[in-house]
Structures are given as C-alpha cells and as structure tokens.
Amino acid sequence: MDAVFQLIAIVIYLIGMIGIGFYGYQKTTNLDDYMLGGRKLNAVTSALSAGASDMSQWLLMGLPGAIYVAGLVEAWIAIGLLIGAWLNWIFVAPRLRAYTAVANNSITIPSFLDNRFKNNSKILRIVSGIIILVYFTFYVSSGMVAGGIFFQSSFGFSYHTGLIIVALVTITYTFIGGFLAVSFTDVVQGTMMFLALILVPIIGVFATGGIEETISIIGEADATLLSFFASATTAGIISSLAWGLGYFGQPHIIIRFMAINSVKETKQARRIGIGWMFLSLTGAASTALVGVAYFTQNPDLTLTDPEAVFIALGQIFFHPLIAGFMLAAVLAAIMSTVSSQLLVTSSALVEDIYKAVFRTDATQKQLVNVSRGAVLAVSLIAMVFAWQQNDTILGLVSFAWAGFGAAFGPVILLALYWKKFTGAGALWGMIVGAVTVFVWGSTELSNYLYEIVPGFLLCLLVGVIASKITYHPNEEIDREFHEQLVIINKETKRS
Image 1 (cartoon, rainbow, N blue to C red):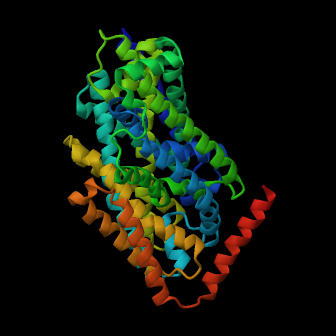
Image 2 (image 1 turned 90 degrees about the vertical axis):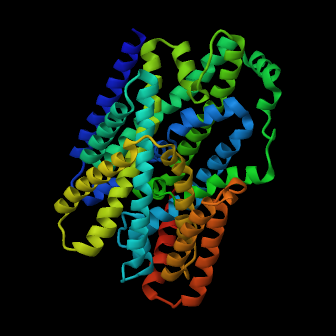
Image 3 (image 1 turned 180 degrees about the vertical axis):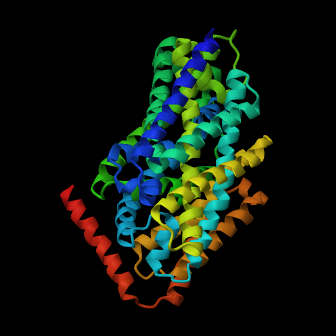
C-alpha cells in the first residue's frame, strides 16, 4: 500500500510538469521566447531556475551519501560551490544580462562571444557551439541514467522503464514549452527540493532526541564525522573548493542571467538564489548527520545504500503519500538539470550551428520548429548513450563540469571585464582550457588535483597572452563595452 501512495505522488508530479509545459507553450511565440523566455523572468524564477538546474540528484543523494560515510570533510565541495555561485551572481550576472542585450541581442553563449568580438568568420561561435553540443549530449544522458536508476531502486521498475519515463516527461515539457516551461518547472522542482531538505533533518532531530543528543550520538559513533579536516589534504581541499570555479562557464546556469527581466533584478535574485542554495546544502549535510544518529539509535534498521539516506529517512518519518513527494523531489532534481541542459544543447545546435551556417534567412516559426526537432534529436541520442547502464557516464558529470568551467569560465570573465580581450584570445583560451581538462583528467594527476584548476588557469593565461598579441582597436566593440557599463551603472543606482 505504501508503494501505491508513493506512485500516486510521482504521477501527480509528472502530470504537473507536463501541464506547465503546455502553459509555457502558450507563452512562446518566437525563437527568443523558446530559447530565452523573451528576457522576462522575474527575480524569483531566475534564482530558483538557476539553482534547480544546477543542483542535480547530487544534492539529495550524492552529498548526503558522501557525508554519511566520511563526514563533514566531504562538505568542502558544497562550500566551494556556494562561494562560486555567490561570486557568479555578483560578477557575471549583471554584466552578462546587460552585455548580451547590447551585443545584437545574443540569446546563447556562443552567439554572445561571436557578437562580442565581431568575428565575422563565425569560427568562435561554431567551435563553442560544438563543445556545448558534444559535452551536453553526454551530460543529458547521465541524467537519464540517474532517472532509470531512481525508478529501479525506488519502485522495482526495470532500469529501461525508468529511463523511458524520465526521458518522455522531460522531453515533452521541454519540447512543447521551451525555456519558459523549463524555468517554471524549475521553480516547482526547486521548491520541492528545498522543502524536502529542510523537513527531513528537522523531523529527524526530534526523532533522535534534539540537537545536543544528535551530536552526542554522532560523536560516540565516530567523532571524525563532525570534523571538516579529518583525513583531508591540502590538495584535496583545494580541489573541492575549485568546483566553485566551474560556475563561471556553465552554459545551462549562466543563461538564466541572460533571461532575467533587468540588471536591477539580479541583486534580488542573488539573495534568493544563494539563500536557497545555502539552506538546501545545509539541509543535505544535516540529513546525512541525522541519518548517522538515527540508524545508530536503531541498529535493527539497516541502510544498505548510503546515497539513499534521504529517501530512507523520508519513508520512515512521513506518511507514504508525503514520502512519495519526497521521492518526487529526487526526481525533480534529476529532471530540472536534464531539461536545462537539453535546451542549451538544442540552442547550440540551432542558433549557433544551423542558423549561423546553413539558414541565416530562416523565419522565427521555422527556427522554433527546428529547435523543437533539435530537442527531440538530442534526447534520442542521449537515450542511446544511456540505454546501457554505464557508470562512466555518471562519472562524466564532474569531468564535463571541469570542461565547461575551464573552457568558458575565463573567457566569459575576460569578455565581460576586459575591453581589449580579442576573439583570438577567446578561441585559443577556450581550446587550451578544454584540452587541458581532457589530458589532465585522463591521467593519474586528477587523483591529486581536480583538472579544472590547471585548465582554468591555462585558459586565463593563454587568453590574456593571445589578446595582447592580436589586439587592434575596434570602435564598435568599444562602444558596446561602454554601453553595457552605462546600463549597469544606471540600473545599479535605481536599485
């Protein structure tokens, strides 16, 4: 009977997501709407959409599982991500929103780079579009794998049945409603994740006898679990904190900055987004520690999979229907990330390759239809990669995060803050960053230092050197650079 209640909750959630997809469809009339929501997102939607698309199943399963096993030493990644996200909102969000509007209304990261440097050869746009297309196709497939595993472990469905369910629902609302549907579903999904991660540890603390009793039980079980430095190395802490560097170059996250209604609203969105992230990460860590205390108090109960500690506690503490919505929160974390990555991959294929190279004269209706076709095509390819359950696909998440962070992060920062940054600097920096991550990540060096660190630094260095060699004054670039600063100053004063 418990499983029936939980399935009812999952079905309600899935139907709700498709309903939001149709609502997004009614609000979509052109390519700008489909790819960027017409730049009309308010602060709340932008903040929760950025957070939900960022935090996948790692937030509800990976992080609690790691802390349950090894303790707070595993929280350094969370700390690095929180700092990186905060810096991203401060340094990238306002300027990217202003500059992409000024630079020929750029609606993707590759189109912004192309328009920023006035590179008529389109090479920068095409190369960056291909990088996004290739990496995100595998990235999307990793989310589908997670969805298949979710239904397999939670309800006993076959892996392929679970994969198909997640793929069909995510594809449906993304295909139909585009960016608006993805953003609106992100708000619901982000809220579900947040509430679940707050409720489970709060109820858990009461179940274990209060905060002091909970800490005491954990200390008696294994005092090192409460230490941030137990078994930690300097290189390990640096590698964990370096995850925060990745934010500056994640297309599916920073595109939310481009879609917000105005520069002024980025400040409010930052407060909401970072508040959501801090409380969610704290809730995830607290869930793990409460789990240690609870299962120590109840040795007759066993937790076979540490990554399922959140799910297990939810099923113990709540009515099966509520526990079903807790499970739906895990599914929401998976689907919110997949849908965002799916849309960015589609935009790279259509806006940055198809439109730029093959059909510059295509109508808005044609481009929207091609975009929907691209969503379907990329989804099917991702499903093919995910069909055979393969752990290396899931492992690619950290590799792809480093790849995007090192290839695009320094390029975005330099493009926004350095007027003399050139297209050649961007192109060679991007290539060197991506190659460094690939080479470093393929060797044992990655066991000692996360590949994003050398990749980010070399991309930055090459970008600066190449720009100093190739820089030539350009009045149009200077004018647009100044214009975006005027917009930022004006909006900042109004806020």
